[in-house]
Length: 276
Image 1 (cartoon, rainbow, N blue to C red):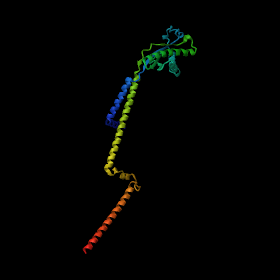
Image 2: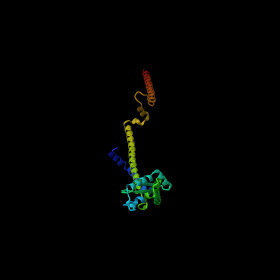
Image 3: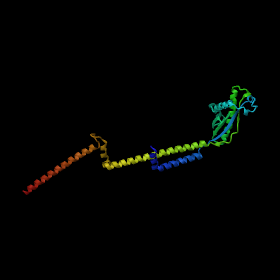
Image 4: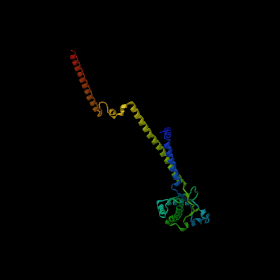
């Protein structure tokens, strides 16, 4: 179906289309107003070298002067570990039910990591964010202790700024409303096309019946219309009894005519005898 045909269908069935669009708008409004909300909290953390590295010349004990490529590799290592199935299972055991992400901070130029968590309520999201930060610090320390790293070379993990109050995840809400709207529009078009096709089939069938009755009035009588359901030379169960009845009727009519003729002849003979 091209756009021109679709336009004509929508114009013919504009009432159906309008009702379907009203239902779609109502569904989108309900989803925007009463649909499920999600809240998100984010925090950024940084890696800091241990005291042994910070004691080197040029750093002078200031960990913020000791950033290097190794720390960025450490961030990549930790983010992968925090999003692994084992880590997520441990977080779930600690009561974290929201969605957790760990990645490099946007536009990061150093060893900066961003943690994000999504929850159903602001209080839940804030509580689980604190759990996630503590878990990340412990996890990073545990990974280094597993390889027996010296205490003075332990790389630290520090929060850059405390996480703010959880905010409403508008993107998720927009996705829900947009999904309902798109599905509603598609269903509206399909419903309109289906109603138009159904009505056109009914109209075509009615016009065909009217044309058949106008061209062949015997079609009103099934006994005669069934004649056209058999091919040439094939017996017709309906017409055969009628043919036999017609033959008997014709024979009876001929017999009546012959009897009437004989009576007339007898009357003429009687009249002639009386005249003589």
